[in-house]
Amino acid sequence: MSTDTPSPADPLLIDHAFRHGFTVTAKMLEVWRSRRLLPGNISGGGLGRGKGSTSRPAPESFALVLGLARHGGRGKRPHDVALLLFGEGLPVPEQTVRAAFSAAVDSLTVRGDDEPDADPEDRLDAFADHIAETGSTVTLVPARARRIDEGIARLVRAAGHTWPPAELAALDANPSTTTTTPKDAALAAAAAAINGTMSLEDIGGLLRAMNPTATANPIASLVETTRKEVPAFADVILTDDNQLALGPVRDARDHLRDLAATAPLQDLAQAWKTAEDVRRWALDLCGRVEEELAAGQLGEAAVEWMNGRYAMAGLAVFSTLKERDRPPTQHALDTLVLLYQLGEYRRLDRLVPGCQWHLLATEGLMPPPTASFSRTSSIGTPGYPTRRQQHWPGPHGTPCIRS
Image (cartoon, rainbow, N blue to C red):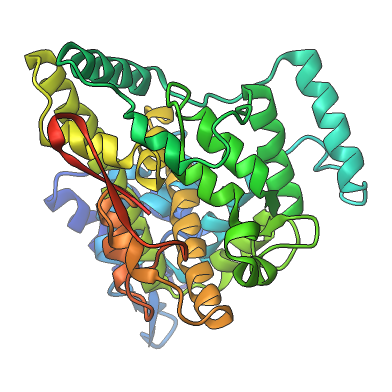
């Protein structure tokens, strides 16, 4: 009776991990393979005469084992581990990566998802009742951002200036518009997820609610007056009831699932890094502004904060501050949203030739990492196709940008 010779493949991986300071067991390798985080060994053929067969680790297994030893501890969710490894540039099996991104989208749930055949309007009515009963809301202005806003306004006024500047009023066609409440924001977010659309009024209201101390909000006004100001453009991107369609009208999460399944891995990797860079930029900006406030002197950081406060750069800061400890799932969602955003720019470029894509290179409109990411696309730096670029004077004569 012959006995099989143990395969040398797993001991090679175990020894490789040991030489890099990690303890890995054969059982751990088996679990990682069962979760499709680690590829199987490559067969090298039989030894003959009943002596068993040889095998060797897949080349990528050596790097993956070290990453798994760092991130794959007890209680870690396999999808989270896969995303962390992917974010480090490790060769996680493609099917596993895509499944992890899809699982991130599946984490976005809306009340009534267990009734897929229910009418969307009935679902939203039920969700509105649920919000009223439970008091569910969303945070519109994180506390840290509110403190920074208050500190800047205090120093500007102490210097004898008005903030926000009165000149903004002339740029807002709807300065008396009622801002969105936190409850309204929760319902609007649910509607956007279920229908894949959002009204321009809701978008404008959210922008105003995120800047509640502003006497006027030019960016919100630009959104709200799109149909009046650029009717030909509006006819292309808006539905008959003035809804902005997020691609073909359907559940917005389906768009993200499509990206998880089809986006090139290199695009996912680049967007993942961009999302990471945006978070780092936002936290750094907050820290730099706070240092200036503590010193009692507004400088470059405060100007950067004020330039972005009305635009997408400010929204990115808010999103970052709401996620003190961002889990891999949220990072994956941010990645897919970035890719979706870029895809929409490309779609609009085909539908509406001649858009003023250069405008989003304007300081403050986009987080710098996002602007850089967008410049790698075939359309260059995209921007909102609206009126000519202008400037208004900021505090101490510092120029602030508007479009």
